[in-house]
Image: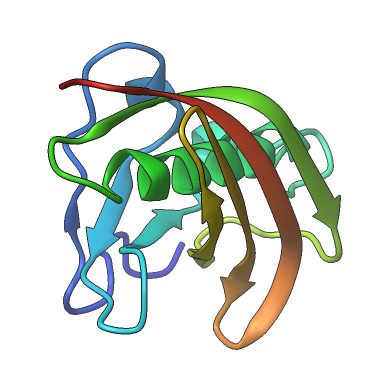
Length: 139
């Protein structure tokens, strides 16, 4: 396996304990061009019987990245709940690969947020994604 550490500029996400602890660890990096970047190193617990990252790992990563962008879009922070998630798998990811999710917030309305983006291995897209989230504002 390659270096298990994230690339420079990434810090542990520190998401709340529970399910996300099992799917990650996830990392965050500030991004002047838009929502924070979310990173994931493919580890042994992500691998399926074909020695590739399980599709569920990639779809969970997509959901984490898209929903985090919505959560972090306003202050006070939003509380997003996934309504729909679509992931298009383009290529597989292998043990040791560093994946980076780049997200766009296409629209945030009063109760719904629309997002899209891609998951990259280096400069190579391995998946595209889109999601719709119900949002609750903590006013």
